[in-house]
Image 1 (cartoon, helix red, strand yellow):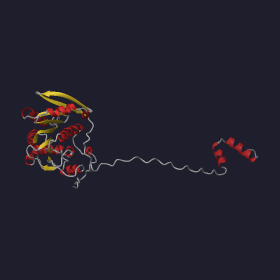
Image 2 (cartoon, rainbow, N blue to C red; image 1 turned 180 degrees about the vertical axis):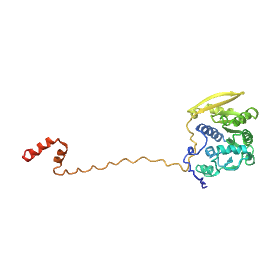
Image 3 (tube, rainbow, N blue to C red; image 1 turned 120 degrees about the vertical axis):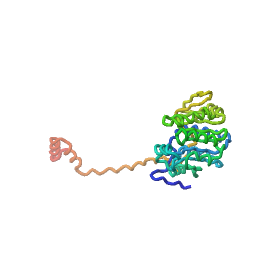
Image 4 (cartoon, rainbow, N blue to C red; image 1 turned 30 degrees about the vertical axis):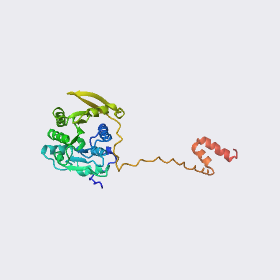
Length: 305
């Protein structure tokens, strides 16, 4: 598929070139959950509600199997369903267009995901209940919308599925915090772990996920971890800056790696220039004091050396 062209944008040569909020810590955690599901043979589709310019969607798509569907829902440049949502879009996502998303995505993948351009309330009409193994919620920050997105995520997930809720603790997104912890206290959502940006949970049993995160240490290089308890529920908390996971997709527009520079070739030595007759005397006249040069001229006229 040929990537569309968004006016005034360039094709990304790496995931870092794609604007968005998807730090290395969350890339590592996404990779841990998604590769675990693959290793255990857990099948299911993938869903992202709120994609912005595609950074996390590009990463998630690297884990999609051929028989699975990846659904991405975003307003992009469509009209918002209400004025509050429209004001939020004007403030935070004024430059977002579907063309820009597609251009970024197709720089890394051959085919686009299944795109639902519209509010996330349309997701149930496109995603079968109990069909997804992983859902990423990063759409509106308004409480009513986030609460509905969490309900839709639960309906879409398989019993062992994992949900990642973005911006659950940011000071500018209290609606996300309220909806997230409401789902925890009253909606059966059980925490697996927290990053500095996302809440990872399941409506299944979180213990096997947590035990695997605790059992292996090499992936936690560069991370700080603590184990806490909230209302009788264990939750792991991670922070820091880990090494980037090996699963980061590569852009088809990645710059070529330069080869070794050629060895410098020494220039041939220049032949000595002949010294014209009388050059020594002329230099002497220019450099020596006048009294000395006059004495030299007298000696030369007298024929003495």
